[in-house]
Length: 262
Image (tube, rainbow, N blue to C red; front, side):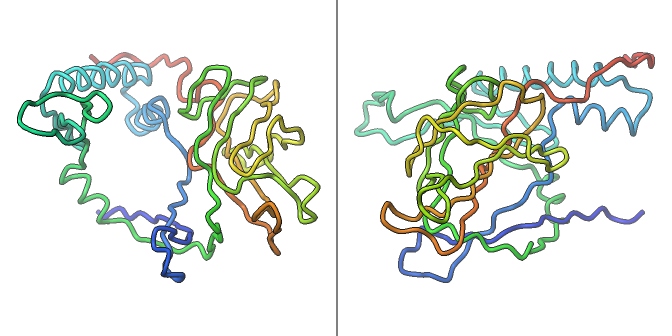
């Protein structure tokens, strides 16, 4: 049987950490889509028809919960893909072991197993042909003002607070608006174009989410000519937030009348 092959497409983005070197670039992988456990369960059920989707999801939730409990109980847990191990951040001054809550925190380190590393060895890298000229511009964090969450979940009819650098949304003339859109990741259609801002500053954007935005995953994309308060770019710059913005739940559930395999 032929070995499965994978292809990761990537853009190039200027690497800003080396200020004195102008020709070094970092690769930015272009993920195809986001899968949640319900999606994974659906794909397994399509391949292995003897299993119900809800059975796979429920068992996986039990496993994930137990892994969290064991790892936080100061144990090493090894699955087929990941090794979980307890650790503490920060350094300690002297030999007293005095904990500074601002520096010393309990964390769980997660490292790929040999099986995961072997699978990634099958990945071929393919340049998309796109070089992102960021000029120091970047999205930082997207916060849903309604819930206070920064995990990518957003509330239709609510407001988003977006921070970053050089993200003012302006057009080529420096007066009109550029383009800030929510793109449906399922079909790449533009689901919403933002035309009114509560804040439109170089380091912060605030705007309302359309109340009728349907459930699904969206890509936040900004096209702007902003460079500095006194200078506009000769060509527009396009920024895309690293995480998908999610409204509601995702697919993968539904009725299933196949027998449960215990």
